[in-house]
Image (cartoon, rainbow, N blue to C red; front, side):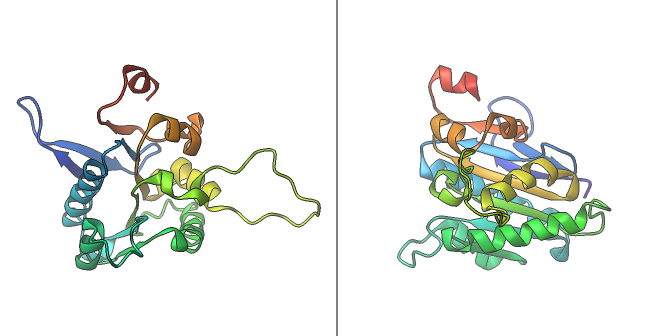
Length: 209
């Protein structure tokens, strides 16, 4: 489809269900801010259920990062969904470096043609604040040798937010507070989340977002 809708919930007025609509253009990313784990995982689960139903099975891929993915004692709804949806995989902090490096290669390969015939890719991140490797690197860090530093997962995430949308790669992320938003998402990158869902918070935090 030219656009795909992630259904988020029932409306509070006479209109259709609330949805985040993903298109192949810049800023086509979704950020949800909630201190309730139940709220944030329910919102992502709703999106992960509704999006694949709108594509042929071989035309969409889901990469889900969940901090509880490796915890066998925890029954996460996202783990259950990942096991039932074609072309979906789920991992935790241990998989971040490898999977983000793979996404960086995918993005680079699509840049010349915008990946017009390539499957849509959705990177789903639950509790962004629990993935330390995705926090932007210290700008003042430096090296004593001339060896070029490898591209970090946080730099790849920034590239995906900036250039992924037009190339069919979208980010859906949840995070708990505005303070962590400002730590993990620089203000320039925050503009790449054109779709935002805000749960209960202070008026000041709401204004910032």
